[in-house]
Structure formats: structure tokens, C-alpha cells
Length: 270
Image (cartoon, rainbow, N blue to C red; front, side, top):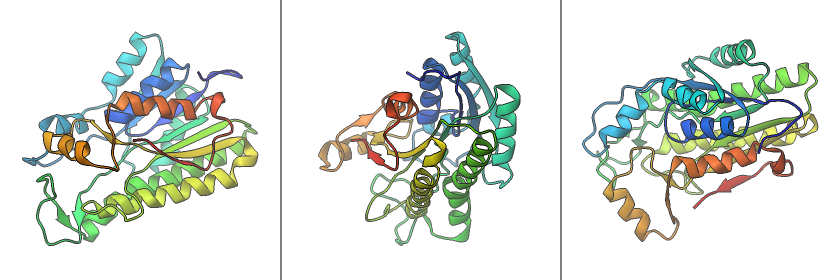
């Protein structure tokens, strides 16, 4: 559980569905006031991607906020385009206006552009792939690398300015030692975010801030098909198709007092 000295304020990006929505609810259940940042995405139709996933990406975070409030928690939704370099400042300003200073930052949002160096038009699950280009690289790195870096920087600046001594940063990553074949810009951007977060863990430790990254297992946020489940069942590297709530439990733990000694780690869930 998140505990005293006071009610904590969490900023969760990508909080309109999936892991972000589940994390917002888990933090609220632990006593945080939660700012649910989101941006609606109108994905093109892809025969190999369930419509459920497209519908989830197009949602606002209002339903998440309603669920939190129904359970007695405090939450607010704000639409913000993380490809805008000024978004970080606006998000923290909004949070401070509504609830007070942010001391828990969850960098969950993802652009998820599926691009590749391969000449193949589809991946092993039949999902459409695009060739790597400025049009795929730019938005992916803006959301998954630039935005987390700017959010961490703003978090640190405001934390130090008010003399705070407790803070938590959690990012989410994907891919591995061999990159992320068939989602190459996504994997590369997540690797950059991991590097930023590890640097923050070292540079901000004296301010009482911990910083960690969670590498979720295959998580069913609406995109998992029978083909994906079959792949996981036959894989030696993967064990579970997790629910967003299962991943959120780990993130919420890292944002608690109990995790004070856990920092500068990439925590791989299987």
C-alpha cells in the first residue's frame, strides 16, 4: 500500500485502456489521486488485429475516472498529445491545479507503430507491417522516448524545487537484447526510455526518487489473438498471457513505500 506522509499524486500516461487504465485504478485503490493522461488513436483496420484493440485505443479515460470515483477514489482525465514537447509541462501544471504536486510518474503510453526492415508485408501473426521511415520513426520516438525523458525532467525539476524527499518513477519497456524484430522502432524507442530511466535512478537517488522499468509479459489489452496465444504456449521465453491488472499490481508495488530499496532495475515479468 502507498502510505504517509501524505496522499500521493500519480500521473499515468496512456491511462485510457490496458495496463495504463489498470495501473491508474491500482494506484487509486492504494490511496493516490490519479491524473489519467491519454490521447485517442484512430488506428486503421487490420484484419489480424481485433477490433477490440482499435476500440480501446480510441477511448477517452473518462470511464477509468468514473470507475475510480465509484470506488471512492480521486481521479481526473486529461487529453494530451505526447508528441508535443510542451505536453510534459502542461500535464504537471494540470495535476498541480487539480490535486497538488506529482510524486508518482508512470510512463506507460506507447505509440506502437509496427515497422520493419524486412520486405515482408505482414508479421508472423498476419499483422500489417510498414517499412522503417521517418513517418514511422518520428511518432514512435516522440511518444516512447522523448515524452518520457521530458516528463522525467519536469518531474525532477519540480520535485527539487519544492524540496521533496519521496518520489517514484516507473516506465514500461518491450523488446530485448536482439531488439524487437517486426516492431523495430517500437523496440528501439523503448530501449531509449529504459536508458533514460536508469540514468534517472542514479541521478535522482539523492532526492529520494526511485526509478524502475517493467517489462511486461504478453499482455492482453485487446490485441491478443489465438495465433498469439499459440505462440506464447510454444515459446520458451514467454510463460503467460497476462491481464493488465496483473502487470498493474507490480507497478503499484514499485510505487509504494515497500519498494524503497528497489531502483535502477528492469523487472521482467513472464
